[in-house]
Image (cartoon, rainbow, N blue to C red; front, side):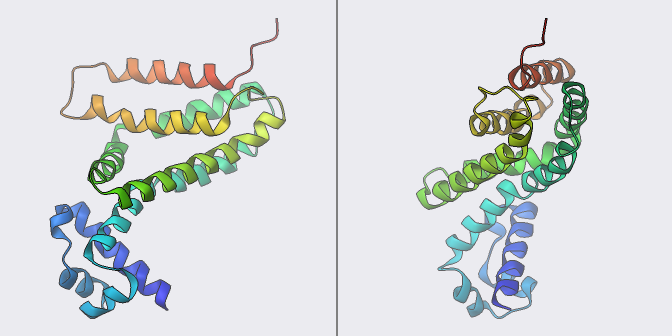
Length: 201
């Protein structure tokens, strides 16, 4: 029951930040949205700032975790280099879809909110590392089969990949004139170049 209440409070705080930024998170508003009394919040979070920090951390990784779970099922079916290229292309097109720009903005705004807040910065860093380890775990079976380069540091690759996908926001923000399809092609080539072993002569 306590975990359920905490989850409802976090969900309400995330919704409030999505709708109106951190200023929209008030103890009274969040308690009402979660269906609890205001003092109940302090049974789960030290103060309002701790609630906001947890909500920002949840905004940071709420979609990436689900994405990695989805790709894990596909990766389990890969037995050849050709299948890896085909599934990677599908996954990259999905990840780079302009419709996902709002999720990239959520991650970027969560990172921005950590400036001057060491506790939140530590929380986001821990979430990021956990995501990278999880992503690396998805790729490890392919590395063991020899389909992914044996010398590739999977955790470092996951960090580069996740950072690059988030960084796509720079060409989506304020509709820059940079050719997004050209960016996508360069990124796809870079990903496949990083993970694929050299083709046999």
